[in-house]
Amino acid sequence: MTRTRRLLPLALIALLASCGQSGPEPTLAAAPQAPKSDGLYPHEGGLLRYRVAIRFGEELENKTASHVMPAGWKFGRVSGVTADGQGNVYVGHRGAEADPVVVFDAKGTKMVTSWGKGLFTKIHGLRADPDGNVWATDTGDHRVWKFSPQGKVLVQLGVKGEPGNDQAAHFNRPADIAFGPNGEVYVVDQGEDEEAKGLGNPRVVRISRDGEYVGEWGGPGTGPGQFHFPHSIAVDSKGRVYVSDRENNRVQIFDAEGKFLKEWTHLGSIMSIAISPTDELWMLGDNDSVEILTYDSLAGRIMKIDLETGRILGAMETPGHMLSLSSGGDMYVASITGNVFRFWPAWLEVREGGIVPVP
Image (cartoon, rainbow, N blue to C red; front, side):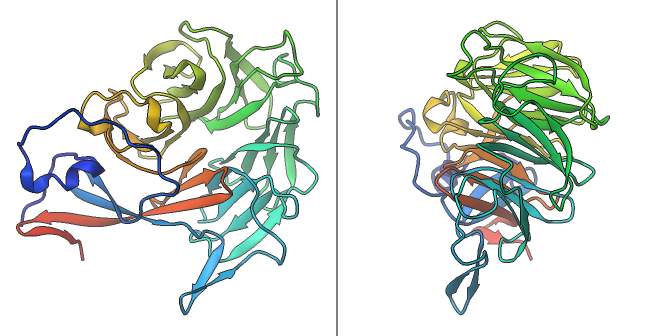
């Protein structure tokens, strides 16, 4: 038995039998309306097969889907999703009837609880911290929240309906949250709002786990450390901070204090960044803006990225807004179409005669 150790993207799996043949430079296809099921993703030492469930929030019995939320509830635009260390999945959405945060089991076949009614105008980012608490941002009311797993408010930052940029007293469209290895909390603040003329100041705000202001960096522009509509943020185990500078079509990387380290401009417009505890880096990007350097960039909406070089290691197609990783290796994608897509891994091996599942 032999295993391949070459990292190949989805689109190249079909080319295994004809490896070495030349052909025209690939072009990007239009983004699909739904994820591609049974997708293959290459992984060191073998192939990782990501399967996808597109009926999150429903239970299948005898091939019939049963809605697991209360009658009359359905997702509105799903803007955020996160998984905690206990296997619970929190879905943040903008539906009219259902609570804005609905909690499910890992497979989405059982609703655990829900909360947040009346608190949000436009819920956006949703992230579980290492202590099991859940942070949320509201781009409509310019607030940042920290909740217990049951929805009890622990910290509330910003003033409802008042955009601003004075430390952590006011925010202007806070979009996402990330957590550093030493308890730091980072909020990416878009700093742009139609009603806040002259207050635009896109930035990263650093706070303590209790919500105390520590520092910030940023400002409008295209230079190092400047942003145009930053949308997502993540931190690796070394404390490096990754920011999706969305409208500048780049990812900027900083140290924990905000010192600029480098930028990646070949990944296009990145919607969401997620980093696992083992420093696996994933990004959810705009398919049409990924720079085609090699076949590695052919397939992609969800892209696995080399943490040090920024090289695209592989990709899978899916629409989406925010991406989250679970401790068990599942990926969850929040889609403003009103869906949550769950991807889960199953190992495959390349053997003589074909690709087979690992027992």
